[in-house]
Length: 175
Image (cartoon, rainbow, N blue to C red; front, side, top):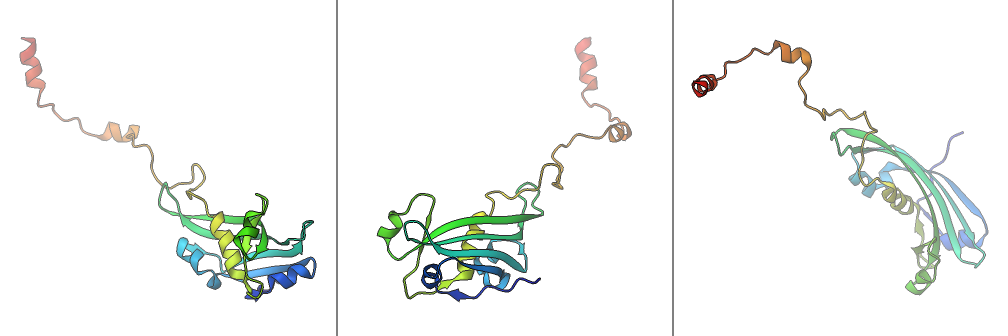
């Protein structure tokens, strides 16, 4: 079963008013320009599931899940590291600041005028950008950087012993 590509624009107000409406599909990486500028490489597509509905207080709500893979630069060894992005969000569709301020703390505002379409890729991209780690790093032990610089025992035995130029001073000090 193949998952279809999500539409470019949807009417969030209409979808929420029609009751529970689900959109599930993919967003190609070509539509995620800001994300592509923030990473080394990214998957060809990202999965998204969006649910449009009204909550108990009759607010228009968009719940969603997004996921995908990106390649970032490890902050320890500066080599590429693959990072899985997985985000979940709940947003209320609002059209002014007063409505946004009245929302509970666990619901984010999605500012959208009633006659303005929701650009699906921008919503998915915003959530993916929020999922990026603060510091991308390989798991412990996977970095390809030498963190300790002790000579090996074999190298220490093979190194020739050099004469100490201050050895003469040591003999003068004893006498």
